[in-house]
Amino acid sequence: MKVLSDILSQMPKVYSSLLSHLKSILGFPMKPRQLTLAVTYRCNSRCLMCKIWQQVPKEELTLPEIESLFSGGILNNLESVTLTGGEFSLREDILEIAKLFIKNCPHLKSINFATNGLLPQRITKILYQCLEIVKDLKKNLTFNVAVSLDGIELHQKLRGIASAYQLTIETVKSLKNLQVKYLNLKVNLQSVIVPENLSELNLLLEKSEELKTPILFTPLLPSEIYFKNLKDYQEFPQKDESINFLGNFFQKANLSKGGNFGKSILHAYYYQDLMRIWRGKKRAIPCRAGSDWFFIDNLGNVYPCSVVTEDFKMGNIRESSLKEIWNSERAKKVRENLKSFPLCQECTDACGLVINATSDTKFYLFFLKEFIERLF
Image (cartoon, rainbow, N blue to C red):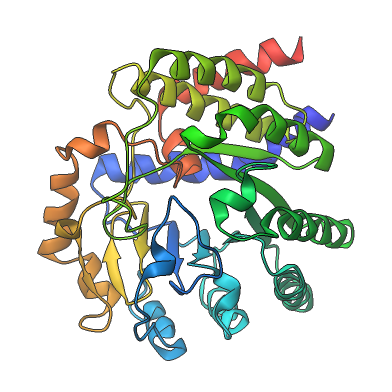
């Protein structure tokens, strides 16, 4: 019964993806279903693989500027928003930002927070307040929290903070306690794969199972506009032994008991594509960036996603309305140029994973195969 429940919980997302994909094929005007909004680039972590924390502070989007996103109706079909940073919890008015999306997006199904987990009390308080707001409004809305955990002994080194591991685990346990009362709170772990932490990936999988919390492993990504790490980025994995190790590790991760059945199949499909790319083939999972989902940085710049270059900027909401930007000739040109952008052919980003995978007919064959094998 648990397996069936996990699968059925994914069906509304599948239906939305199929309907949106059909509309796209038929030429209907597209409105995004998912947004990633970097509410701040301030960060209390000092990650070796990300340089956001080194950025000189600039005037971030104000609450009224964020509220302006909802004029013009472009976000009327929004189903999911990810509020990220930097560290989202450093934004003093983060609760008010979340309220804006709850109030103005009639089809919103989930609000997602990406966090380094270094402020356990602050993060838990924000989620508690969000959950209480939704409870009072009697809205059917899920809150997903992705907590970064990149190692056991190595986590503090990779994050540049001496107590990073202890604080992260405290955050996860605190949120899990909150989850007992609020079933619409989902807690996840996310781990960045880098050369330094290969030796601890199995330990991370064990910790995921111990905490009964699903974990997603994603490779380090180069990004000119977001992580600001192009200067120090080194392509990984390069050696066959690392690729083979990760292939075997992903097979083990696919069978982990840390997450639910439906999500584990989705992760397995993503890992399969990672191995395809690392073995020299093109990315198989289609990407709906710039059409079904998009990215806005802390200064109001609008991009298809967070790993493109500055050349793919669609506009800035301080200069034009989101409606004008989304329907502009510039945006149309950006979407067209994405089709031939080399990085897209080998992109290993997991952003928009549900939308991207469920827009791919091959995913359903994969899902059926995995379902039968795991069930029997």
